[in-house]
Image (cartoon, rainbow, N blue to C red; front, top):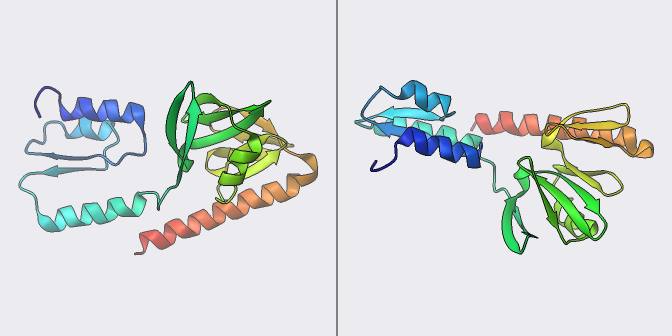
Length: 186
């Protein structure tokens, strides 16, 4: 590559997204440890064996999100396309919403009801209290009327719905695990 190394490029890509699948294709084994420290998916040495390349691509397809939906949000007069999978939580803030995406919070002029209507069709999302919507993929646990998130946020759970919300989380995790097992068997 001219001007910038593959390792440096990979590190920059990791700053943007942890979900990108990185496969290094090179004629040198010298940078393999650096490549894997960038959380690369694989490291292919030239000349390329078609069977090995095919197997790597098949494995990569198995770990890719399946047809992840996205939504456009407007924040600071910019339209930002956001994958559902990157949304961690949303909190109502008067006529605005605070939407946490990859540990960054955006303030958008949109009603909580409007965004909830779009996201609740996806089983990852759940309203746990008035004005609080979470993505189950980012929940650490629900305990003592609180929902603990991976982004270090904690939200109160609706006391009347606590048992059903905890059950919904259990069922979501079970179904996700079953889908992962089925995908690996393809």
